[in-house]
Length: 473
Image (cartoon, rainbow, N blue to C red; front, side, top):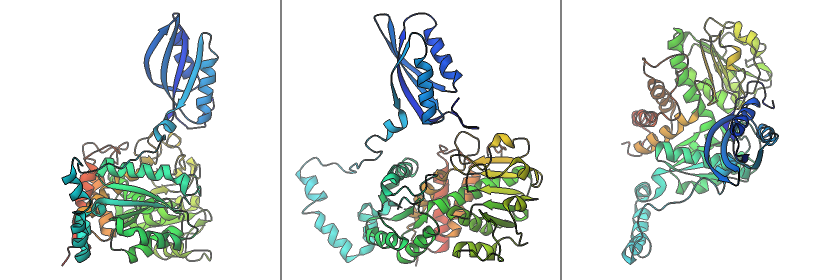
C-alpha cells in the first residue's frame, strides 16, 4: 500500500471514479474489494447506466494521497471486466473557478432603485460620510467586512509558496467567515518582500474594511506586522495563526484539566514550537493563570541563558520557564502535565510521554502529521488532541475567529484585547456540557452551531468591559 504510517483515507484526497463494468454477477463486488484491499474507502456508489452488456458506475473514493489515488485506479484497472474511464479529483473540482463570488444585497429592479443605489442618490450618502466619518460603519460594507491578508510566506505546512499559491487558503478562510458568522471576508494576497510593505499596503486598504485578519505570514515578521497595524488602525487586527490557535488550545486545555482532575494553576506545560502560534499560546496560557510554561524551539528550551534569541523568544525567556530548565524538549517534558505541539511531525516519542506526569494532556497539533500519533500513546495520555479532523478533539481555529470578529463587529470594537481572547476561549470550553465532557470530547466540533453566537456574545461583552468600542464615552 502507498499509505504512510498512520495516514488515513480522507476527503481531502478523494476522487470520483467513472468505471465501466462487465454486466455479470460479482463484478461490482470484486471492484469494491479491490479498492478496500489497497486501503481506499468508498464514500458512495452513484447511479449506473447499462449499455450493451456493460455498466457505467460513478464511485466516490477517499484516499490518503495523490499517489494513493493512482494506486486505487491501477488496482481497479487490473480487474477483469473493469475499466477506469476517468478519475476526477474532487478537491480540485471544488476549487475550480474559486470558491467565492460577489452577491448584491439589494434588488435593482428599475430606474428608481438605480437612482438610489447609484447616481444621483448615492452622492447624498457620500456627503453624509464626509461630514461624519463614523457613519462609514453604518452606510457601507465596512462594518461587516474583513480583509484576509497574507504574503504567502508561511502557508499551512507548505512554507513560503508566495501570494498566488496562498489564494485557495484565503478563499477558504473567507468561506468559513461567511458560513459560520455571516461575516463578509475577502482574500488580499500581497506580492511584497518585507513586513513594512505589508503594513504600508494594509494601511492604504484599511478604509474599505472593518477588520484585518492576518494569515500565513512567517514569524518574526508576523509579530511586527500585527503590532504596527494595531497601533496604526482603529479597527480590529487579528493574526489567526497566533491567536486563533491560542484561543482554541486554551479552551481545550480548560476542559482537559477538568477531566484529569488538575487545576490550571498547578499545570506545567511544555510548548514545542516558538513561532507565531507558540508565542501567542504561551501568552494566553499565562494570562489564564497556568502554573508554568516551558517553550522549546529546534535548539531546545528557551531560557535567559541563551544568546541566540530574537525579540519574541527573549520575551518567552523572561516570562516563562520559572525553573530555568535547560536542555532538549525531552528534558523539559519530564514531569510535565501538558505537552502542546506547534512544530512538525514525529518530533516526540512514546518514551517522552511516559516521562510526563500521571494522565498527561497531549495536544500534538502539527498539520497534517502530528508530533506523535494518537495511537502511539492511547494507553498513556489522559487526553489527546490534534489538528486533524480524523481524530477526536480537533484543535480547529474555525471555533475562534468567526465568533471573535462577529463579537467585535457587534460591539463596534476598535481592537481585540487579551480579555476578549480569553472570553472567547471560555465560551468555546463551555460549549461542551458537563454531561458530554469526556477524553474524546474536550472541544466542540467545527459544525457545532452554538459556538459562534456564544463566542460573539462573550467577546462583545469583554470589548465593552475593556472600553475598546467606538461608542465608549
